[in-house]
Length: 83
Image (cartoon, rainbow, N blue to C red; front, side, top):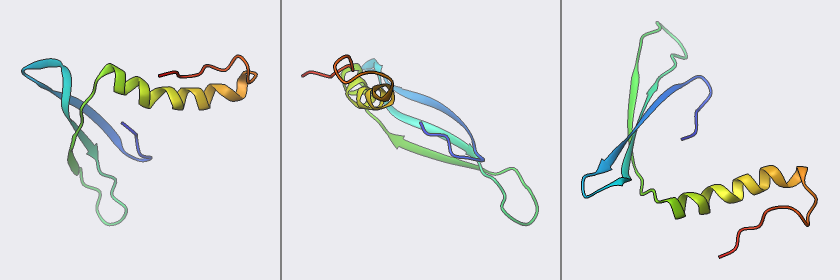
């Protein structure tokens, strides 16, 4: 989950009873930041459907890791993802 500047986020995953290893939704609560007027505690609740599996997580994360690591490695030793 991406954190946004000025927001404090807490997240919990809701699991499918038939497959406890797979999160079926993610609940994120953000403390809203007052931009003007009186400061009051406000909370925005956001429910996002997600389906997480190890294979899909790796397919999404690996390109980000590769692009982060690649500038520090020579092109021949940079990790490559194969199908």
